[in-house]
Image (spheres, rainbow, N blue to C red):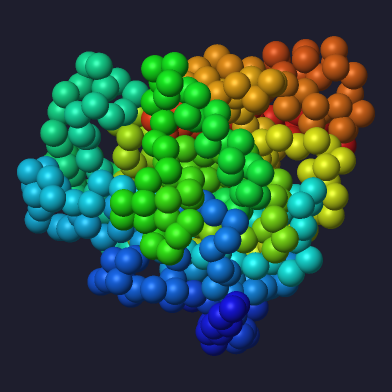
Length: 394
């Protein structure tokens, strides 16, 4: 059953560009952030599975408002100490709002998601915990910072003298995997664990929805995968457009895990984590994933949209890479392999624009920035390759 919610919404309150000054009837999913996802049924999920029922149906071109919870599902609260976190549910991370059924979407298409607007909640947090993060062999820290978010900056009593400017983005956004993809991805991650690597395998504990076989078979939301997910790419801010290969009918899009600000790599494993409200708009590129043989998500940011310069350089297009070999073998924490995949996809993208492979390779050498977008959501660290559109005369 697809549930339809609508919201009468004044676009001027979002400071959209350009504002229309008119009222819209906007579809929406509302949540109660005072309640955990498990206690607020029908608002989301925290596992990837193709059989999770969509909550709402939209057509390409419609604006959709989605309210989201923070990455810990509301378990971290102002005034807590690190020791207070010991009793938290450990496998409830990344509660996502959705899924959304996009009319007309089918396997082989690309779903383009435009982040029309993002609005932060007034509180956020950052934690360092032992055994986690990029430098986990160096830092055995137990640290929790609370952030007050106001007037474009975040400030924390735990880090005095610092104000962090807004760079809001959604850390997790993706579409449902197909049954075949879910089985294949679980098999490769299981193989990695057997070889001594790190991956969070399916686990019914704290799963939402709790129904079987979704709870025990659903993929954990920790790593990004070919369907998108927890890539934590800070350039996916207001005005950005994320392209996702569609795996199932309707795409079944979900998002969550908003960050107020983050450095590329999110090296301590958390950013300024918070709830947020997102307005998104979908576009379908029919058959494009199959035609391009698109393997990983792509994203872009048009130059006309005003976004924080520190969060997203204007007017670029980007590809992403994960540490997965051409034969499907899953590697763990291999930034070199991820960077190679991002670069190879950028060469393919330039080929689509008419450049030879040699020309594309030179352009990459001269103008493409490789960014470590995510170094902690194991096993799939994520590298992005950013190409400035301004280098082209036309």
